[in-house]
Image 1: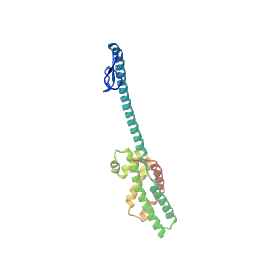
Image 2: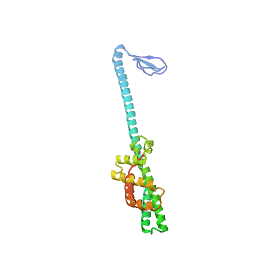
Image 3: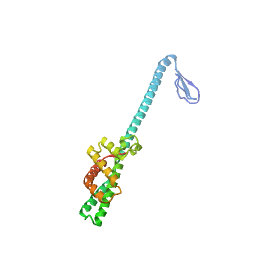
Image 4: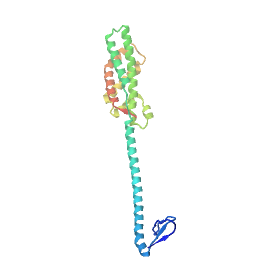
Length: 222
């Protein structure tokens, strides 16, 4: 092997396929030395290619793992964003009905107070029926493919669906049907007919409303 001067500087370079600087001294290899050294250099190059392939494989594996983690985290966040059903107003309506009913029973039937508390009972009875339907719709949203499908349900079908998803018992559903039918017949009747029929329902109506309030406030909706 010998040094060949190709410029002003003396920087050595190998002569087995490698690149050499534009100036300096190039290392000229003998055939024997080249036969020994070049396969070793080729081995280093091959191992470099294998290492590069392993690096790319590791890179893509890390990328795939990151995507899986991201999707899993996104699903968890989606579950956590489900909102608990707010029954604050509903519960206040129940308390108002209880109070109005209590004061009604304490009032003389021919008094102004009796008329006032009877009207209050009718109004709260109607509000609670309406709010019960709205809250049940929210509770049923996770079981339907769209909100429109739930919103299309009529009152009694809504309660049947609630029973199928264990939100109400069969006996409770039948009583809510009675409340609904009674409301339809007394919607504009604040007189004797309501007193004779609806007042008999209010005690159990309050109990059923309280029961469904406890059930619904534990439910979530999207």
